[in-house]
Image (cartoon, rainbow, N blue to C red):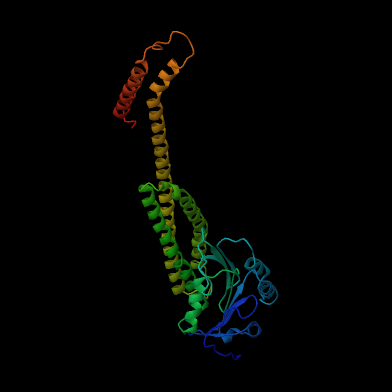
Length: 343
């Protein structure tokens, strides 16, 4: 068995394209190694876990040339556009899942209008795990497992590791859905208080996020369900039971997401109603204003004609009489408009 030093703190991204390389000691702990030592690994050394950046040239070269995996598996691990799925190959599983992208510890958090779901490509068999995710992304599920291994409290088997990854990927969805639900409540309050102007754009983004999440969570549920029913010998009954709990939680999240989507649809209808009422109210005001200006306009039009026979031309009280008539008519029109509810 090859000897490897135990790092007091595991390094991250020490080699190009490689995020970390670990050997799990099957007792909850791990040892760190580099790619050169990984090539000397044997199953009796422990469980090998290699985590790469999928879109890095060095990682692609290692997967294609040195991983000893089937060409179908290597192509799928390096594929660009993927959806969650599980494919059994010999005694292993090709697994593609999606996890919520988090901000790396050394980066400033940014406000995103869309939810970034990071593809996580994995090959898992009885003694080896190869995982890949895109560079520039960060999945807290893998970080938490790595920290647990560093403390000697990590998974003991590949089935245990796979169930733990699935559990933590689904766990990270909960704060996202809670934030979306709180935003729906906030938008509801804004519509209720008449702040419809800002709501429209935020509501559109929220609906787009819900559709985006739903697009990947449904196939992810099917993928995890396939893992649960796979007959791989390294998947124990306790692993399948834990995976079943993960699937149940994911199904609740999908129902929760459907409820959020339904609420956004209702809010959209409420917003349309508020805008329609506002347009109708403004139209009534314009119509009332036109009605109030109608008597003066008619009188001014009649007496402004340049024809003979206009009464009051030589009467000094004619202008006063016309002003009184217009005033009385306007007041009467105003009273009528109030009675019929236009003002």
